[in-house]
Length: 240
Image (cartoon, rainbow, N blue to C red; front, side):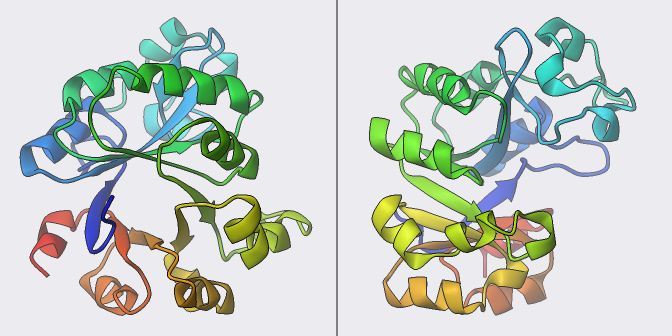
């Protein structure tokens, strides 16, 4: 897959009226021919749902843990005044139908292998372009060993949000390039000019950057990154 200058909508084309990670947001991406980034987790009854946070409160006003709630419990929640519901991955695949590429983030969870297997099973009959990414090196390892899907490692430059042991592991060129053998590395905007990313660029590793929210960030990121995961400005970036 050609990653060069690829613009991807972070959680779909969402705005104040259209909630992120919703079928409405993804439908807009399809209509505008913009690739989609989305997040998947497992519900208590093992349904693959599309949602970013571990808890539903920020998006619904109701506090439920995704992994501790059944799909029917989650389905009753409203994502917005438009009564948008939390979608399943299957619903997203049925909507998109291969019309735009998908970048699926496998979220950390209690059973990463089960989630990965279920996502893989859903993708077996899907003919569109799909990329996989995760912060969890176990997930990346699983997809690289068991599938042919392009798979990347998500890394954050914020040391405070990571274990003192985990940070150096995922910021190791040897781990990323030799042990995991990833197809790309996805880094936050603040970490783009780090020594770690510079070393990967010398080795021709494709670099994804998140999350671009301003034209000025895009212009700065173009010196370091190949693919740009953006919020709210995807249509503007397509012409740059």
